Length: 104
Image (cartoon, rainbow, N blue to C red; front, side, top):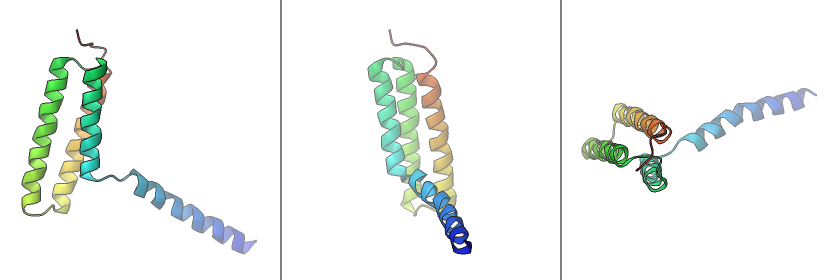
């Protein structure tokens, strides 16, 4: 019985680590995903032309920032800054796609 409890505890301790590993994505994966979301929103009319153009400009500005950071090597602080900015862009994409403004 004691070994069964220890095995269950060990398994429970491993589950959060696996979930965290699956949730973490590289910067390139995030960029591809966000650009695809913008493009899909433009294609299906969820984003107006102005919204799509603005989101693309923000996306490209973030890519330029990433390139500047990578020149000297990407530090932990720079990685955290990029993650924060990608999170903010992702929220803006989410909001703009659901604001019920349709492409005319």
